[in-house]
Image (cartoon, rainbow, N blue to C red; front, side, top):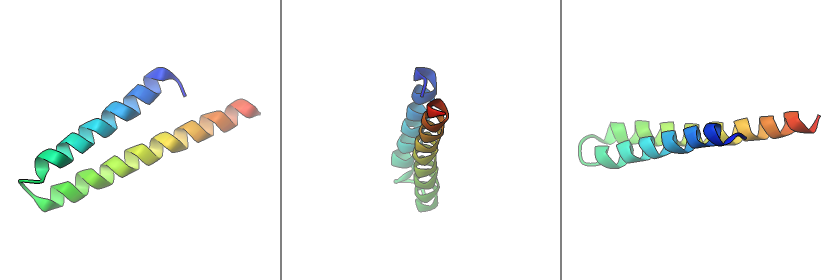
Length: 58
C-alpha cells in the first residue's frame, strides 16, 4: 500500500476515534455510529492492502 493511502486510512480512523471519544458525553448513539465507522475504516484499510498485495503477486 502506498504511503498516502495508508496515511489516509490512519488519519480517517483517528478522526472517527476522536469523534467517538468526544461524543461519549453527549449521545450514546453517536458513540455507536462513530465506533462502527471506525471499525469499517480499519477493515477497509486491511482489505485494500490485501487486494493490492494480491494484485502485485500476479
